Length: 165
Image (cartoon, rainbow, N blue to C red; front, side):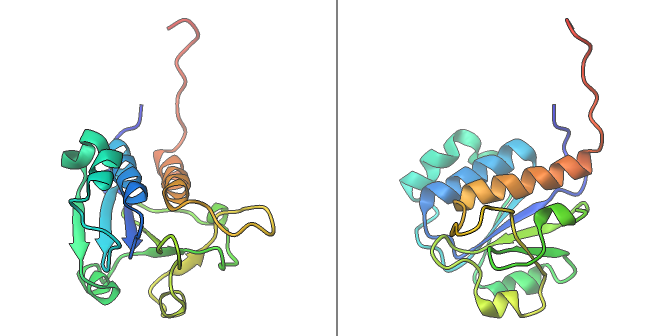
């Protein structure tokens, strides 16, 4: 069983476009204790029925912060340690030691994070390892992989119950 972190990870979606992906990330946040931050512009309304359906009945368990721009996000969290998830990054997710409160930042499904964000010094670009000549992972899949790698590291060694218990 996962224990809540005192300082949870933050999953930051910058300009997400597809309601079910955002709903799935919200559900991921609800079941892991990660915090969700959405950065506008969004490709949908947060009252969208597809968004609500994908998040099911977990929306009341998600810390949701909606910010009007990436610069507003940076202003709201000036001291956050950020990892900018990108297929163009040279450093792998597996090469990082995550810390409580880290922000995992994801771009839109169609564009990813823009060059201005990746080169702007607001965080360290990271890639999720994939086979060559593959374009990308689905946004909610990538968020799940990154979140659980961070949680795995932060949870430390797990104890298994003895057989038959």
